[in-house]
Image 1 (cartoon, helix red, strand yellow):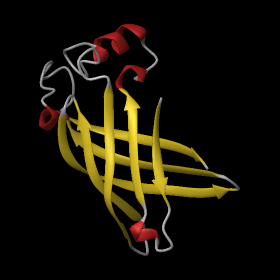
Image 2: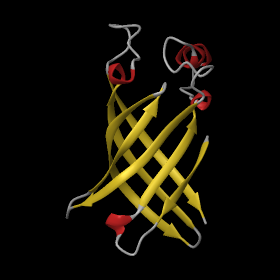
Image 3: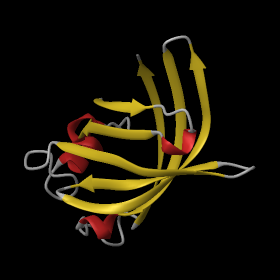
Image 4: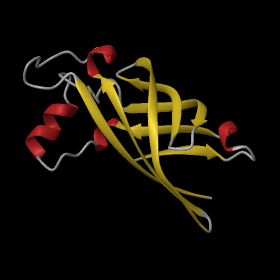
Length: 130
């Protein structure tokens, strides 16, 4: 769960995204694993209850679009690129999805080496209302 703002500009490349997600809302479908991911070994939600993303630019090509910005996890901010999939407008609602790969070590999340992969692929599904 989270909240944010999408500013849609006349030129799509000038559009902006700012999102705050509740770190404690992480769900994998396994309660024991979820509790461990929320612990100080990983997301440390007690000290860092929010994960943030702020876009800087959108680049489009014939094949796809990439949203570049900064992701903040556990108080550490790193650059990230989100490859956008479908973006649909339905009246006052915008639905979008995208994927990104992050290096958890870059955010200081280094526990469980060998048990948890270093590079994580994230899939995002976002629904925004006016």
